[in-house]
Each structure stands twice: as C-alpha cells, then as structure tokens.
Image (cartoon, rainbow, N blue to C red; front, side, top):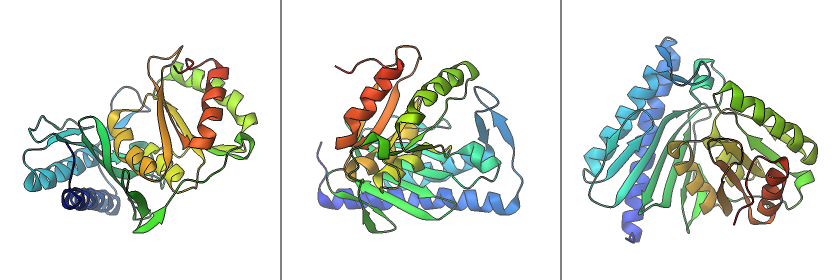
Length: 270
C-alpha cells in the first residue's frame, strides 16, 4: 500500500493534532499538580491517570478522522482496523520524569503501513517542541528541517541510553555502560527514549541504544530519525530477554554495533 502525497499530509496533520491534544492533557495535569500514580512491572515502571486520559484523547481524534485505521496504544488501545494503516501511540513517554517533574516527557504518535514506519510525531510537552518526520521526505522540529550529525568517530560521539525497569537487567546494563563510557565522548540518559531518538535525528546526540523498548516507544521517533537520515537496527541480546535498539548515522552505526558486540551483550548481526 502506497500513500499519495495528499494522504501523507493528512495523516501527518492528524498525528500532530492528536499529539497536541495529549500534550494539553499533560499540561493541565502539571497545572493542577495532583494525579493518581500506579506501577506496572516494578516500582521503576510507573503509569498515571494522565497516561490513560492522554491516550483516550489521541484515540478519539484518530477514530473521528479515520475510523477504519488500526490503533495500538501503550495503555491498552487496540483496534484492528481494515485500512492497512496502523497508529502506534505512547501517550506519555517518560512517565517517571513526569511524576517527578523532571523536564523530559513527550507524546509519541507513529504511523505504520504493512509493518513499515511511515510517519512520526513527537511532541515534547515541557519545551512544546514538535518533531515530525515522513520517511523518505525529511524531518523537522517546529517546522524547521533537521538532520543527523555526520560524526564518524566513536571517541567524539555523544551517546544516549536508557535503563530497563528491572533490577537484575539494570545490573547488566550498568556493566555494559562501564565498557561503553570510556570509549565515547560521553553518555546521556534523559529517561524519555522518544526524545533521545529525536536527539539523534536533530544532531544533538550522535547515537542512542537501549534494551527492552516497546513498539510504542520506538515507532514515532524512529520514523523521525529515519526521515532525518539515521539508521535504525534491532539487535538480539546474548544475555537479556529483549532486543537492543540502536540509532545512529550510517557512518557511526558499524562502530556502535561493534562496541556493543564487544561488551558481550548482543549477538553479531547477520
């Protein structure tokens, strides 16, 4: 299934609008200052009523505009659809940051067609920046074109990462970090993978890696990064139950993969 230019523009505008509605939910909750907080897999894995309300806003907007599309959301939205278009939603990426008032959280709305990333919108709700991308057509931040940096040396690369909400896996991730940190310029951890991936897309970060991300964590931001010239790989782990996502420019990717293989945590890609 191929989209026309008009269809692509319509989907992108719907994604931006839906993300803005969810961002407004975030902002209202911050203004009120009180909301219910629950846990999922561990005390490090939080969910709030704001996540759920934001997802409802996104779903309502999408279904009003495109009732035949599929939808998959982190907080339970699941509509199979019949159009071949699937929306992948993270209504509040960086929930722990949001709960602690740490300024890194977003809304992520991605569009896939037949398993292919096509469109992504990530709305940074603290800065009110909006990242958007159409694979093959380019990416923007607040309407201005963005692109990956062309750094090719690991020792000059600023690398982003994140940690899985499980104590045993975090111990292994700490061991990996100990091996990576001396080999790169520095490492950053925002706690919001969609913004980290957009950081690669906009040249703020040179690469990003993380284990155990969900489809909703990846879909929107990976589309933006790919549209901005990044390469995206999923690598199988030798010791962890989840895959590693790696995002980097094409010149740096081979070095990042080799470094992760050297740590012993991922398999050599075929």
